[in-house]
Amino acid sequence: MDALVRKMAPQLATAPVDLALLLPGGRLLGPAQAQVKLRFSGWPGVAALAAGRVGQVAEDIVEGRTELQGSMRAVMAAAAHLLPGSPVHAGPGAGVWARLRSWLGHTRARDARQIRFHYDVGDEFYALWLDPRRVYSCAYFEHPDMGLAQAQEAKLDLICRKLMLRPGERFLDIGAGWGGLLLWAAEHYGVQAHGITLSRQQFAHVSRLIAARGLQGRVRIELRDYRDLDVAQGFDRIASVGMFEHVGRVHLPGYFARIRGLLRPGGLVLNHGITAGGLDNAELGSGIGAFIDRYIFPGGELVHGSRVLRALTQGGLEMLDAENLRPHYARTLWAWSDALEARLPEARAALARPHGAAQAEKLLRAYRLYLAGCALGFEQGWLALHQVLASRTDGKTHSGPLPGAQSDYPFHRGYMYPAH
Image (tube, rainbow, N blue to C red; front, side, top):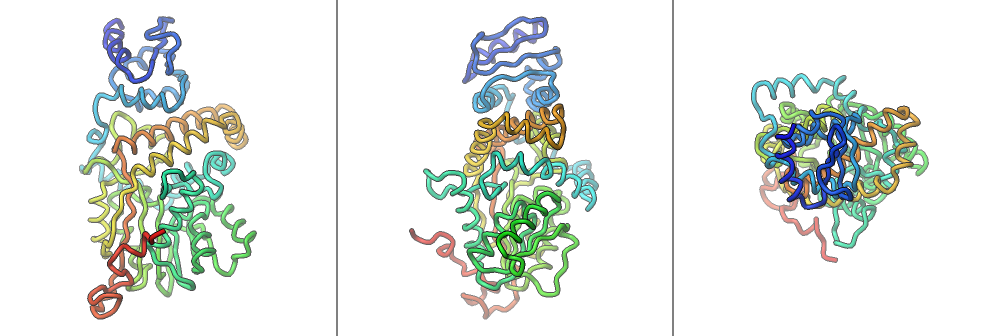
């Protein structure tokens, strides 16, 4: 064990924040008043930290084998320092086993269970740290001084502008969440809005909002898988926000093909989702991806932005515009993390009501590490967030705003970012 201690000492000494380890047996390594303290119940946890397996360290914290003290911002500064290298290039790639795992991991029944594992943790818990509309995706900080609620509304409006929503159009929101985009599109752009979700709690929440706002004739929400949705007339516009990460990389061409089938010729679709920082890894290395898969998003898979465009093209859509909002998501996640840290007793109580005290404690530890860890990941460029606008071309070379446009897209960005 002395070798582990000797290995850790230089790392602690050069850390950007004061870091101390309370080792098994009671020995303290590092300053007594450190900003971040880790108390280990066994040597395997120390070995994991020394090896830079931060995902295993996070699991030990969640399971109570290691005790963590310190602010989440200080903890993440220490975690970034202790990593042996970038986790972008260490995750599993697109080999035969990864493809088989992706294929088998995304049946309708399994996807429904995995979605509910995360999104049905408890509405009361999410309401404590999300904005009032409960928009659970990357915000758009149009101005540096924007608060989270403003930035989420700016993101909703940006999506609607990119899609060029008009009154009376048929609009589909795949993975509608707690209804933020669905209701914004109906109330601000006058569309006929149709949302689908696999989360029972989100479905119930959005149903209540529709009734409370008197939108029954203009907004509809269904508890339905996107693969089971069928319409006689195609939708004019489709949005998918924070959903395609759950599809599975081998299913992405089929996912985009299904969207094409739901979209009328000439119509537009916007896909907003997290993408990988590396070309081939489906998750982050150093055990980070495995931690997220176990405790937060089972079955989640990420692909590089270039692979999104490939799958979109294989699905029969034409890419029109792509935008990376990566630092916006870092700021969004820090806002969520800070909000959760400010209300830990309430969050613990909210989780305990449906899950019991012991499970609530585990969930709270996991979410604290997840939100702050993801904020770090987006800051560092290990993860990205892309909005991709695409169309189903109509084959009519003399229709549209320009000859050869073959869609409603005007082939300029002026309408997306009007002058203020």
